[in-house]
Amino acid sequence: MVKNKIYSYFLEEIFKSFVTILFAFSIIAWTVRSVNFLELIVDDGHSLKTYLYFSALNITNIVTKFIPLSFLLALNLSILKFEKQNELIILWTSGIKKIKIINLIFFVSFFVLIVHLIFSVFITPIALNKSRFLVKESTVSSFNILVKANNFSDSLKKTTVFVEKINSENELETIFIRDESNTFQSLLSNDSNASNLSIFAKKGFLQGKSLILENGIIQSINNKGKLNNVGFEKTVLFLDNISTRTISEPKMQETSTLSLLSCLENSYLFSKNYLSDECKFQDGEKEVFQNISRRIGMPLYIPLVSLITCLLLVSNLKKKKRMINTFSVGFSGFIILILAEIFLRYTGNSKFNTLLYFLFPLISLPLIYIMLIFKSNRELN
Image (cartoon, rainbow, N blue to C red; front, side, top):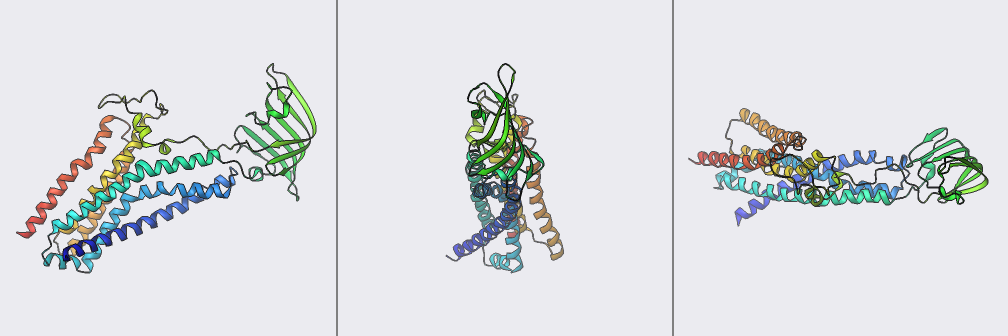
């Protein structure tokens, strides 16, 4: 019963540190990234609601990236705290074996590994995909945001807008619109084959989701290459269907893990890397391997750094050397995570690199665990 309470106390302290560090890192990084997302409002004219929802969905990606580092720091800080408060000495003198605490930490690391896999394999791709779909389905909330006086604006997809002046009544003066997307083709109902519209107007103003233009001319080119001019005193441009240049198609990191794995169905071990014919990322073979390695391979390094941190439990050194040893062990775990992130970029270069990335933690785990058992048993003799 007493031992169970001790183990529960250890678990509680480790998880409290882990959650606190992960939350702190994530909220800082998310705040910085959210500032970058402001371009959705400033440059692309999306609504505040779209911006907030898009930013919230991206926090899962940030949390996923900080899980390994947060767990490493939580373990190191927890062990240092236990040692500083002489709690470890009390444990050893009460008869609790060090290997029991090592096994406990090792068990916790597998729990964190599963959490990381759930986020990286399922939650994060789904959330990022939903955020991209949100931008794709969202319409421009304010045309005024996209238009600046005496400046060509190309924020709209295949549409360029120039406004010479915006007066005190928020009216647009001397307007030029170049439409290569045929969004406003309905203005020329008599010539359905017309394209590349150029619209000139002396004055205009917004009314809801429509742009009212006055005293202007519409130029277009028909399928025979003939230039046509149509004058107007007043016309209405409906802005419901206009879209910005914001990338709307899902990126690779926003694609489901199952879809990426299906790209490798024709890819065999140690053979030349190639993707299946149905894969939509034919030009991104290297990135496919990197994304799969990040989602499935990176979590495998969590138990590895946890065992490296456990070296602090089996070291029996004097105070000065122990400080050096504590720094060395913590730094070693940090270096492992850095190297894992660096070598991740080379996993797509060859099958051997990808295989090595997955095998390294799996081979290192039993070796370090055996060393921990040996050291803990040697202290008992």
